[in-house]
Image 1 (tube, helix red, strand yellow):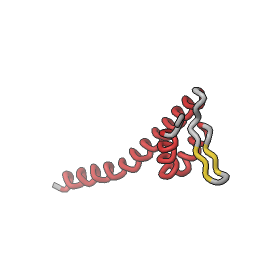
Image 2: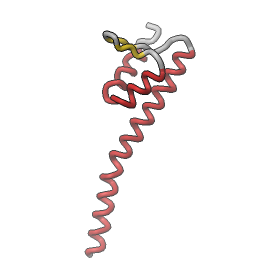
Image 3: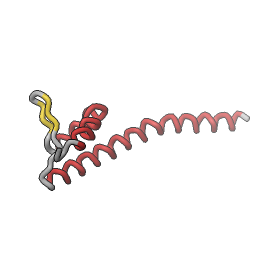
Length: 87
């Protein structure tokens, strides 16, 4: 019985440890998608651009670095700005 409870505890620990890792992989995957998509738009001559004050996000590298540093803010900005390309 003690072995069964120890195994269940290890499974619970591994699942709880896996969630942050899965979230990190999802964020990194979206970062790579942002870079590839921004690069594609840039090559087509319709770059995805966002600017506020002196901050200008207009290259794939800037979008990637922004997502890597502050994903929770920059990723939604990219999606919003992407929808305005060519409008």
